[in-house]
Image (cartoon, rainbow over all chains, first blue to last red; front, side, top):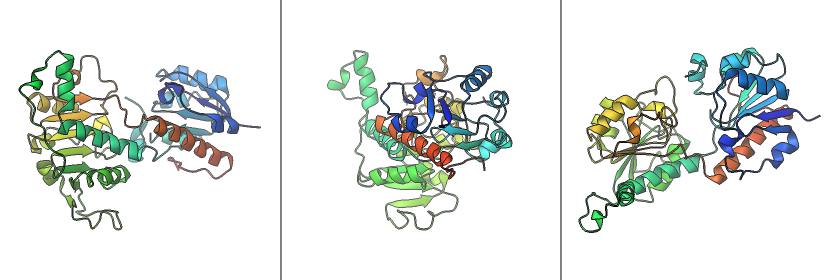
Amino acid sequence: MRPRAIFLNTARLDYDGALNFTRLSSLVDLTLNSVDSITDANEIANLVNSSNAEIIITKEMIIPSSAVEKFTPGVVKLMCEAGTG
Amino acid sequence: MHDNGHLNSLLRYNNLPVALARSLGIDVVNVPTYSTESVAHMVITYIMNFSAAMFHQARMLHKGDRSNFTVFQHPIREISGKVLGLIGGSGTIGTAIIDVALPLGMHVLISSRSGRLPLGHKYENNPRVKVVSLDEMLSTSDYVSINCPLNEQTRHSIGSREIRLMKPTAFLINTARGAIINETEFIQCMKENVIAGAGLDTQEIEPPQTDSELWTLDNVFLTPHIGWRRIETRQRLVDMTTDNIESYINGTIMNVVNN
């Protein structure tokens, strides 16, 4: 079974819809959340927990500790910064 | 701004709480190099624009001021023979900048406490690439480009003292991280016309706050952090992020920043 992944702020990277996620979609059950950024820790945690994602992808978005502390224990295994960070 | 703590600064990692993630058994990975050439070309783009006062002239024309067609008001200079100073110039982006600067006829100064480039560096023995102290580089360069990472040592490291060392005809370019510049001191220097101009692709807060004086300074030109935004660069980022995830799935995880 493919792991679930959620790109929390896809619009920060693919703001014009010009990018190709085909290969990534072939590897994971991918959710692309089409916003530029989320700043509220509760909103981040709710989004991650409702997606049941093992993999989180972000682009230049601050994930505060207070959000990570609200993740469902043991579900998230990998956080990917799409960039240098 | 965030609560990621000292470990993040040591890791040069600004967005994710890497230490907490490690304590919860979460691996954090990044894409360390994807925009090297794109950012380097952004620096060169700024240099070329400043050399011909393109920004100033575009602003004048947009305001309906066509006086440059009769009495030219801005000193413009050839790029060849000018000195480009690089802060953090021995890294991959700095090297990519040198790749373009040398064929343009520029001389390059790299600031380094060690006084030399890393052993085996591509430009180690090039007579037009020299390693000097930060102060010497600032005081003798026509263009100064910031290309170092943001960490506790570099945060606000370019302020009034450093800018006042620069030549009054020189330009400062930042495509790295905004917080490397002490923005309050920078704004004061630019209001006093201490240097000829500055191009900031990155700012401490992006976008700067509505009432920031960065928006209104005649000699400061902002771009909205576009060094990485070229379409090929962004697709490369998607592909390299996919590589990271594939390596995780295959049990050969790479680019972990919180080991």
